[in-house]
Length: 605
Image 1 (cartoon, helix red, strand yellow):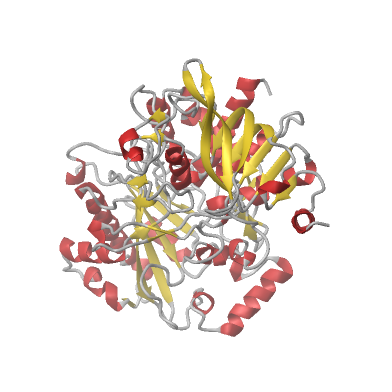
Image 2 (cartoon, helix red, strand yellow):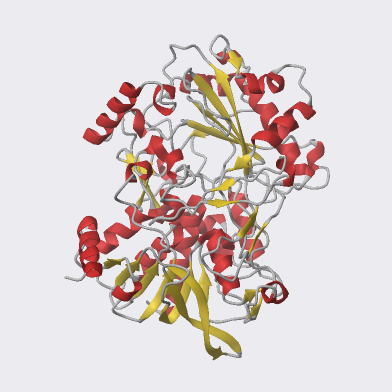
């Protein structure tokens, strides 16, 4: 048996399939023509592939640059508590991107995590499952020019993508979610696998300070605001990703899908014209910068789901973008779309830590590596029955909030989608978490602060015409005074929360690096100094191939078809004209389910 085919057999055995193929080399692909080619086996790509292949006569090829979500170190993308390790730099699951120096962050270069594996970032993110607000999606519908993106229509697609499962510890979770909000789809959703030592204090604070921190039974109801139990994309004690929820079952049961991993899409090839527009139905791929190139053809469409970094890079490598920018790299223009790679939106995150009594049952003995025996016992328990502390996503509660209506930050208008949308997020973790260098011992509680409606915009630009050279990534954090002001307000809000009565005698002190900010007489300048030093990306990149109803704006139309061309559709977070005022992955799944239906309708599948 040839080595390549032997690898295929091993991989197929690993996935338990004798039908759809998981291939590791383009030379193994027996067909050169498919109905659809999906670029990227990530959050959206696997949804599209799974839904289109429900019709056995529709053949689909998926191209994924990363590798399998099984094998060496795969526990880091399966064990919920290990989620932060999945996107660490220099791991096999990450693209290992970095940003350019961020001017507002003391010129720091930031690691910029993106999933490089089956499932994409759904396999490597922190699993936080928030759809956003009713107003967020109603604004999508308005900007995109299609009522199908409105909240009332999207609810069916949110439900189609996910199903509720009960927490792994078997507790009664009836007061932690609203079952009417959830559906019966592939992705498993649940609250924390185990409760934490800070849960009662968080809930008690919502009762003591309900005006600022109201309790919300289910933040995925369209009413986002308030403190809710954190919902995460996990179930049965393990992460639930698009690879486990959508792709694996398809490979187990269908023969009309081929998935080619460890292979990059290098460019789209113009194959002629249709309706007076350039037509793209051929995709070139390769495995290294010097390897042989292969081409595959789509009878109907090429669907780009390579993410908000990868999708604009592929477009620009194909001559689709700003012609003058491409000419500087020797790339001939095929389609003039100056907005490709522009409008990058990301949400900045800052963390703070507090010291709690050293006998407190936080997660620190495991996450800081202080107690190898505790870590080994927890892993043994997880391996045995998928229970115990490793089923924790790190936090039990999350909160979304708005600035006061009289805030000076809103004097020039409100950048959020409406009164049900948030300006910032807070979350609480019973462990050390954040950008600061972690200690080797101690017990801590961490606060997370996120600007959820940023007005700063960055960009993705090409660094080279070589598709294996990483693009230039500039999230351009805190380019506006509004964004910086909201982060200051978020930290001030979190301080009011953590200084409330339920935390008396439990929070002993802030860690030394946060002491100046924690002080009652701290100035906004003190807070800004801290922000500039410790801000990082929460890795919610979006907007770089935005949908827009206006002819001269954006990159795709209301059906997410590439403007000024035929044969290409984009389905990933790059099409968001702005971010939902929450974590975006649930919205990406919802968009993908909607677009799968749109594609089926368009081709009578």
